[in-house]
Image (cartoon, rainbow, N blue to C red):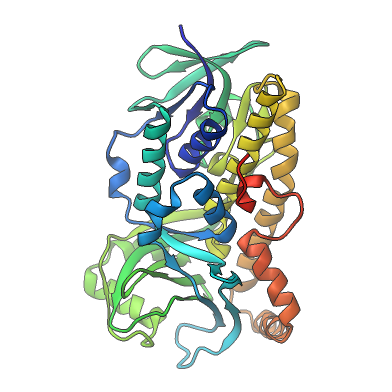
Length: 406
C-alpha cells in the first residue's frame, strides 16, 4: 500500500485550495483528494461567493486568479439599511467604500463554478489526483501514520488527514471532536436575479425583521441574493410558484435597479452556528466548514476557510522544510492556535449581529440604528472595520494572505 503524505477529504474550494497551496510550495509531497460526489456535480453549482481582498491575494499566489478574474465582479461600495419590509423608504445608515488599496477592492463576487474550475485545473497541473465517488468510512491512527478505510472497501495510508468534508463532517465525528452547535430557526434562500439597471458594483445588506437580505453584484446586470427568512417561511417561498416568489422578492429587493427576474434556481439552506472545540487531533486537521459554520450575515464563511488554508499550508510546508513530522500533534497545534481564536471571534460576532438585527423590537431597533449612525460618522473606525473585513489588517497573517509565497 502506497504511503501518502497528505490525504484531503473533500473536493470543494477549501480542500482543493489546501492541496494546491501545499503542493506548490512542497512539490515532493504526495497529496491526493477524496471527493464523495461524482466528477461533474460541481458544474451544477449556481451559487456565488464573496471573496475578500486577502483571499484574492492568495488565489494570485496559487496562480489561479487570472483564470477567475474575467468572471469576478468587484464590490465597489457597500450599503447597510435597517427597515421593515413594508416601509416605503429604506434609510441608509452605513456605507463603506470598496477599495482598501489602490486598485484592490475589499471583496469580489465570484461564481463558485469558476473558482472550483480554476482550482481543479491547478490540481491537474501540479499532479494532484482527485478520486471521485469515494468517501472515508473510518480511520485508525498510529504514532507514524493514519490508515483510512474507503467506501469501496480499499484503504489508504497517509501521514496527515485533512478533513474538508463540510459542516456535518464525518471525520470530525469519527475523531471524537465535539462542537458548539445551535440552530437559528432561519434558512438562507439563495438565487440569482437579472435587473434592468446596472448595479455599479454596489452591494446592499438590508436588515429586515426576519433576517438580513443581501444583494451582491455579479458581472452584467445580475445580482446574487442571500435572503434570510424563518425556516417555515423560507420553505414556503422556495416551494411557491414563480409569480408568488418574484412578488415577495420584489417587495424586499425594491425598485432601484428596475424590473427584476429570477435567472437561476432557488434553494434554501438551514442556518446555524457550529464551532469545533478543537481543530486538530493526532494526524488530523479540520479546515473550512468542518471546523466552523457561521451565519452568512457577514459574508465571511468561505473566507474563514481560505484563512484556514493559508495557515495550514504554511504550518505544513515550514514543518516539512525543518524535517519535522507534518502529522505530529505538536506541529498541528501551531495551526490550531493560529486559527481557533479568530474563528471563535467571528462566530460570536455573527451570532450577536444576527440576534441584534433579526428582530423588530423597537428599543433594540433604535439603539442599533443609533450605533450604525455613529460608525458612519467615524471614518477612522470605518477604515479599521473594512480592513478587518478584507483580511488585510493584523500582523500575524499567513504569508499567502499577504500575497507572498510560502
